[in-house]
Image 1 (spheres, helix red, strand yellow):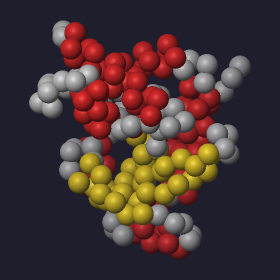
Image 2 (image 1 turned 180 degrees about the vertical axis):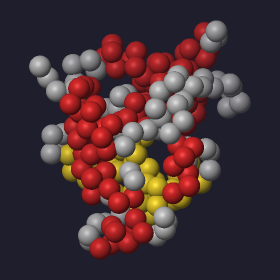
Image 3 (image 1 turned 45 degrees about the horizontal axis):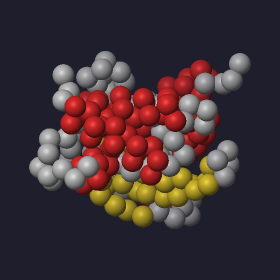
Length: 199
């Protein structure tokens, strides 16, 4: 049972995630600072933060978030189709449904040759920035980060193409602690978009 303090950190974290577009790790650390707590205060786990983010969206963004999420998923699908030879899988808040217009898109690529995705971007004259991010097993992973305009939101969205080895795909599809698929391929994202069409 989470303590009241853990709950308070989770709710403050959720507000920072939704209102400022922070990633969960930095948002947790900032929440601790904002609440005036010691730096070593235990932090809520990601499942608790996700629950708090969903609660916050339901309370404060229920009228705007579904349209924003759909626009982000549409943009994600465009990039997944462009990068189809590299077995793209959508992950993170855009996949799990907790994203808003301030969220970035995280697409995981599973490549035979780690340089091939980068070469594909160069061949298509796409401006990107290589960086290192934390992967789904806590390891360092190369990401090709770029900005892409969402026509529906009329703003630039951060898209991060995370480059994994093809062998990593086997472990990537195991259900998470809640029994859900932790990421989805092109058909899975297309299904999400079909399910979210307004009646």
